[in-house]
Image (cartoon, rainbow, N blue to C red; front, side, top):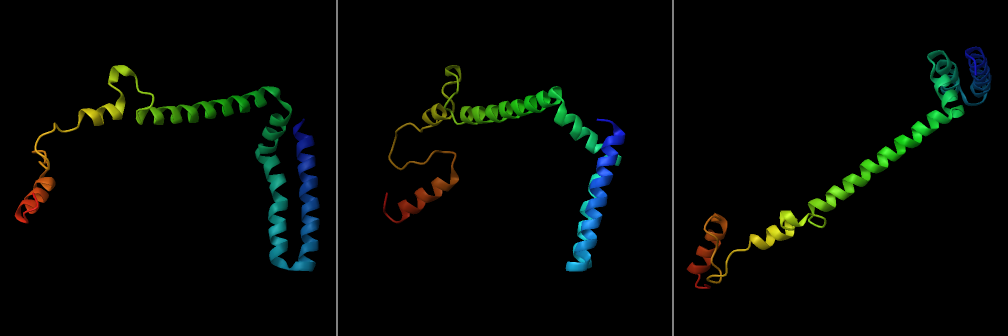
Length: 139
């Protein structure tokens, strides 16, 4: 579509909107009329800035629609990869070479069975709780 045709259509839509805005002024007041006038100027502004031409080209161009579809596929692949990486981080899909992810780390991190209630040497909070239990005669 040519620039002159796009401009003429946009000008016609703007003039029609301004006429409707004048009718709004007489029925609903100046606030409604100003809002109508603002919306009426949008098609003409879009034509003057070239936005309308972009949308006309988009509507009638199979290559641009293929680009839109390709963008959708890219977004879908990105979101799918995020879900897959999230599952892997939880240990569900971790390779065997890494030892099974978080689940194996939990198994490896268990303290050796020794005296019941004995706190690991490096945790001061558990040592404090153990001392309180000993002082009260519970342990």
